[in-house]
Length: 345
Image (cartoon, rainbow, N blue to C red; front, side, top):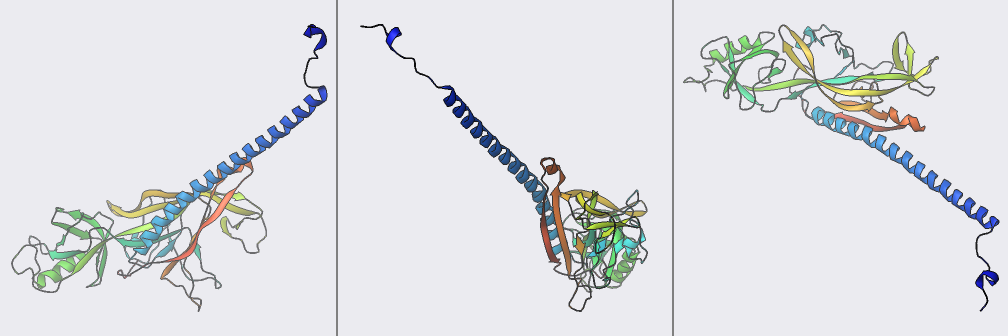
């Protein structure tokens, strides 16, 4: 037998084969990296969209629920406020306005419905309706039968049967049975006098004599877009005019887009001697609609106050680090409120 070392040839890859195999592996690696990069971008995109849109959907669902339950005509409001968020006397039915979340007129301008950063309305507080008596120990005080929770100063007392509506400034004697409620414009004394003449005194014989008056506690609520910033954008829907950002129509000058706003919820409260707006929660972030609320117009061009128009979108600005900007309209609709009990907003 011959020695294999002398007769057997060693097998292996040629230089050409090595070059080809290396090139194939490189091409496959590039394809794999591109697929991985595309997947990461798509993941970042979906995460950003889902995060922004999920918050937006939750916020809009809450807003829609509260607006459907409104018992007053909604009012548009701006998002400016003083340092203490004070409401001023306007909140108590006066015609004076204040710099805090001031009311925006619903009157169309040149046939165009005005837009606003916020909208306010009243909702019935859980536990209502209740009913009202004269306090047997004080003929100038009223007692509200409270099967639910006692009211909070800043809420409103509504007596539809007699047309009384007033803001609550003080609650005393609260128990599981009743509360003494004090009203800003003194209507509690007027109601107590009417009840006393009809023999309606809490807990005394003859209290069932006379007409029966249902009462409601209501919350004045405000949804408003705050914060955010205007970013220079050649295709943006806003322009800066006299220090104010206004909707772009045909004006010259730099255009802007709005992003990273917050949809906040406030409720009216009272302390000491003033009404103020109390912050409740941020219900949605990444809002890219600076003034999403409006009152739609009827066919004849007048405001249709049965509805609140909403055009709300969200954009997560953090996605731009991959050259991607996620934005989509979350809502473009008109939401109706279901009933009106209040004479005033």
